[in-house]
Image (tube, rainbow, N blue to C red):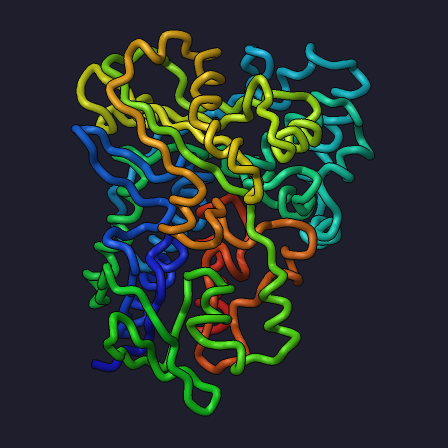
Amino acid sequence: MKYDAIVIGSGIGGLSTALLLTNQGRKTLLLEKNDSLGGRLRSYHRDGFTVDLGVHIISRCEKGPLGEILSRAKVVSKLKFEKVRPVSSYDGKIFIFPHDLKDMMPKKDFDGLMKFMSDIRIMTDNEVSGYDNVTIKAVLNKYTENPLAHSCLFNISMVYTCLSSWLLSAGELMRCLRYEAESRASGYPIGGCGTIVQELADAIRERGGDIIANTPVEKILIKDNKVTGVIANNKEYAADIIVSNADIKHTILNLTGESYFDNDYVEYVKTLKYSWAGPVVRVALDAKISDIKMLTQFGSLDQEEYYRSLQAGIMPPELNLFLVSPSNFSPEAAPDGKQLINITTPIPLDLPQNILDALPQAMMKTVEKYIPDIKEHILWTEYTSISDLSRDLGECGASIGIGQRVGQVGKDRPAIKTSVNGLYMVGGEAGGTGVGTELAMNSALELIDNYIF
């Protein structure tokens, strides 16, 4: 059977693209290599718990690109979100950024931080883009060099993009902060992140789209510099449009092949750098012992020294953490009277093995600072390492994809349209802007708005 379009990969970017294409009336096939859909956003069930693969808070929820995509496709959404005000912590003190810092640093530094935040809100889009090739650390230094202020912004950088403040593009973080300030709608989906995946998948099928899991694409077929289809599980599927939500390096170098692109582009793709990673500890508890919904913790005021220690094989006394308790947002995430907690720590992709091996225990030790009796109530734990994520999702286990760092955002972001006619890239690989899932969904919207009408 010939399709109008084939989408490779069912991450949120691929699902969004497939829904938008079916909404145009195009006969669309979505191919997924794994046995379940959703990529980093998928959920699964264990012993009555609904467990997310990643540690998620959804930026802007229905007020962001997710709502835009569902609205365009005229989906009567059943999704509901429990909103949350993000909180941070250092040295055991929980606070709300930035206002609670007023009593935690000298007035001149707090005033500088607040001016930084207010300047971001009043900038034009062009002014923000002018900061694309400057790190957020360098920009904040012009307002304040206070270590606590910098640690807080580092913390936000990690939660939004899984990149450090000395790598992250200031323009990209500014856009994320502006989106958040405008919507004030971050939250968690009732029923788990898999409910988002399910709603998109159901809508694709309802509009005539086909979805096939357990079907890895082996080759993108090209004739006369135009796509003609793919080979997946040794079967050929024909289409004039191929949209890859897979790793751009794998797509260009392996699925397609270097010979179809000019040398400069191939070298550019090879040098692209991924975001950092976030290995995950999931803890099922026999009782609800904490009211924490979401917490970010940074373990040091000198983050560059913190990561130098990790890369030297030295484990810091406390780890940077991002903690979400899905069952405190959505009771359905755990059986009655029980609790589920998900924990991740942001790390570079090149840490020594002794640190990687010791991470789960070190993460639990840091969590005990906020939930002292957690070990007494454990039913089971699961750990997903970087190597697990890499095997499952590719991209060396990166949390987002091509990192939103200096030299890889704005006009320097990989292009959605390739030089091969009919071949496009979406997701965390090309185009888009924003926090995590919304980056991928914005990429899908850009594809439809600018390339496939």
